[in-house]
Every structure is written in C-alpha cells, then in structure tokens.
Length: 325
Ligand code: CUA
Image 1 (tube, protein in one colour):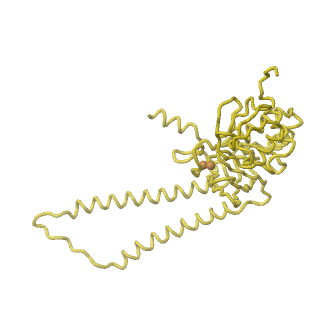
Image 2: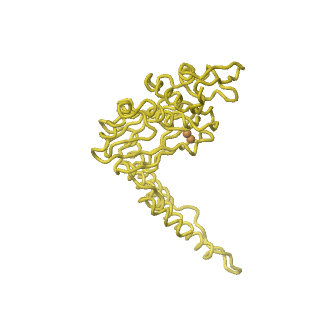
Image 3: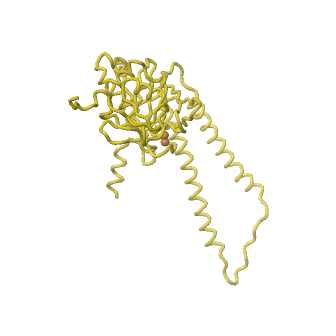
C-alpha cells in the first residue's frame, strides 16, 4: 500500500494532490486550489473543535441551572459577516483574474486545429500536416480551435490545468503556453461512448529549436515515404479505431484481403472492392453499407487530399495476400 503510494508520487513531479505543473497558468490554478483548501481546513478544525468544547462545557448536569444565552450581539454578527465576505471577495478576485488570463490567448499564438471524433483526437497544423499527437514548442502560446464530428468530447490536459468541451456544430477555443519540455497525457473528459476511456493522446512539448525540425520533417511525408507507407500511416491515424488490417471485424469491416474481392452489401447487392469503391466509401460512407454493419462512419470529404486518398487505396491493395489468380 505505502509502496504503491510512493510509486504514484514518484511518477509525477507534482504534489500529492496535483499532477506536474507545466503551463503558464497552472501555478495560479494550484495556488487558488490550495488557498481555498487551507481556508476550508482551518474553519473545519475551528468549528469542530469549538463544537466539541461547547458540548462538553455546556452539557446538562443535574442541579446546575442552564447558562444564560444572549439573543443579540452586533459585534458578533458583524464579525461573522465581515470575515466570510472578505474571504469570498479575495477568492473571487484571484479566481476572476486567473479566469481572464486563461480566456484570452497571449499575442502571436501558434494556431492548431483540433478534431475530436469517436474515439480519436486529431491535430492539424498551419502547414496542413495532421497528427494524432499534439506537438508544440515550449514557452510559446498555442491557440486551439476545436470541433467535434459527432458528440460532445472534452479536451483535458491535467498538467496544464486545462479543460474545455468540444461540441459538435460549433468551434470552441482555448489556449495554453507550456513551460516544461516533456510528454503529457491528453484525456477526453466527457463520456462519449464505449471508447471514451481510450480517447487519449500525447502532448509533446519540444525544447527550443526542436519543434521547427519536427514540423519540417512531418510536412514532407511523401518525400520520405512510399505511397503505401504514407497510406499505412494514414490508416493508422484516421481509420484504425474502427477498421483492423488483420482480418478481425471492428466497428467496420477489416481491410485485409478485401481488394479486388466481391463484397456483399446490406441491400443484397454485391460490389467489387476497387479504387472507386474505396474512394466512395471514404468520401460518402453511407452510399454502400457492407452487410452486417451499421452506417456509423463520418465522411472524410475535405479532410484528405487526393494524394492521400490514393495512398490509402495503395495501402489497402497491399493488404491483399497473393493468391495466385
Ligand atoms: Cu471523447 Cu469521451
């Protein structure tokens, strides 16, 4: 038990209560948390101690007359109104100042577009690159414009003390400035279905100079990789939460050994899986539903370039085992 507790503590450089503090506003959040915590602790101890004292001291004893009680004391009432009022005003002031700082992005923020969908996070950078992890430079304000393709999700990075709902049909925005290089976990904090607890991503905060190198490298995928390798990466990024490549059925059909084969559809007809069928299935997923599956897939229209689409098709074609015919 004590060993497990020590392990938990060793994993974070945070305190017993808090995860590591790694953004420009997390210190302020913790400060207010501890302030309210210690104020509450102080009054809890004071009130319980006085209560016990009074119970003992003024208890009923045979033959002892009841103590005289006063009905009104102006000084007492001013005290118990004045002290809480002052405390609440102080807490409000610190809280409001921090809230405003967390609402208004610092100047010259780096823009990242966040897509949430069951059950994946995707991040699009200004150069068009898409990634399943959020890469940011240290000590640089980052502004996030977030949208959801299906239900309400919530963008939550405990180390940054940052949480904002991502709602379908509208953009939500938030920002942060990471202060410590490292890798942090991003959670979905709004229950969004059976894959909710797996809806995780990493926030990778790059030390000075490294971010530019990562960005340049990430943007040149087609220069470094073959189309099949790019397709493999895209499938892992965009499709793998529902489609396997090893033959197991997921939320959608597996991609293994389907290319060139006939596919039975829900309406009883049959199609052959070719380039055009795959393209149509990605852009208009509802057009032809494979027998035995539901129409659950969102469209990827506008989210994949033609080059990326053909890379995915090349990869699915490569997943077909040679059969000799
Ligand atoms: Cu997305 Cu929970």
